[in-house]
Image (cartoon, rainbow, N blue to C red; front, side, top):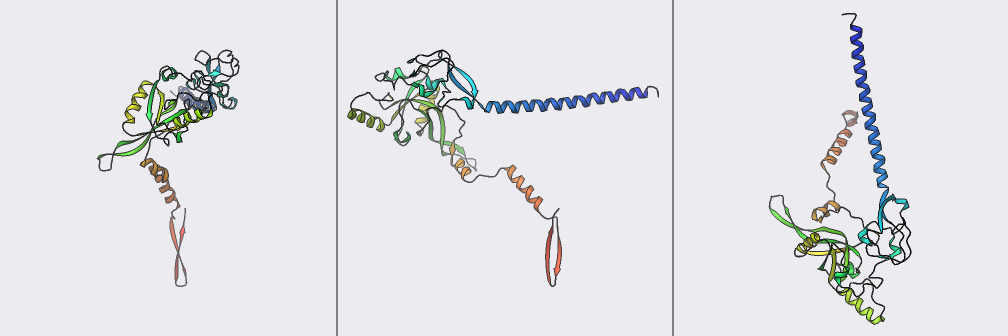
Amino acid sequence: MRKKLPLIIGIVLALVAAYLIKVYTDQQRSAVIADANRKLAKLQSEQVSILVASRDLPKGSVLDRNSVETIIVLKQYVQPQAATSLDRVSGMLAVVPISKGEQITLNKFISAKAAGISNESSLAMVTPIGKRAVTISVDSIAAVGGMVRPGDYVDVVAMISVPVTNTQGKQTSQPAAVPLFQNVLVLAIGQNISASFPQDDEDKRSKKSSKADSSPLITLALNPKDANLLGFIQDQGKIRLALRSPSDAKIEQVSPASWDSVFQYLAPVETDEVKTKKAELSKESEPESYVEIYRGTNKDKIPVYK
């Protein structure tokens, strides 16, 4: 048995060494994977998807799905006003020749309406395929001071009362601003479906512009599901519009706004984690004990910290 003891000890040590090596390699593998994920996340944050021409486009070409493709490039190589969404540029006309692989930028294209091609078109003719023309009634303030024009893109916000449960468990309601849709195409203002007016005399243009600005009716292009939702919401409250930049097609996650969110913004409520951390810091700063010192007839307490 004594002769076998060193062999047994050697086998046990070999197993322990093998286990430790496995643990070490697993840790190293996890560290490498975590580092790779961090680098990938950083790389993705520095990239953006843009549209480029899939073929040579002569002047006057109409953009469609067959004439563009999506690629991913670093943000530093994205040209100003580069298009990131086909919905934003579909149906636009090239004002200059575009080479294959060239970035699709808004300053090199113009809408058919602005070019005067569809100036006399009907609303059905300018409604994109797969969309529905939905007309809503808003005042000039809700419509960005009456500055919205056909061809612009807006975000739609609903001002409605939402049901909530109070502290007593009773059902009640409170006003809220609920973001409904983002990056929605404006088809018409009143009866005007053109982004620019015909080249007639100044009096006619001024008259048409004044009429369009004062119109409370704005027609939006929505998919059938969103059109149905907007029809219901419009009967429950008011609709407001937020105008977007022509080169901004980003969809963001936006939370509804209510009195609770307003008060939270003005006076943030501390979370349980923050309260616990503050209590720990306060506890650590408390003195461990006190030392009494007499100066004549006066007695002082000197705190003693850890």
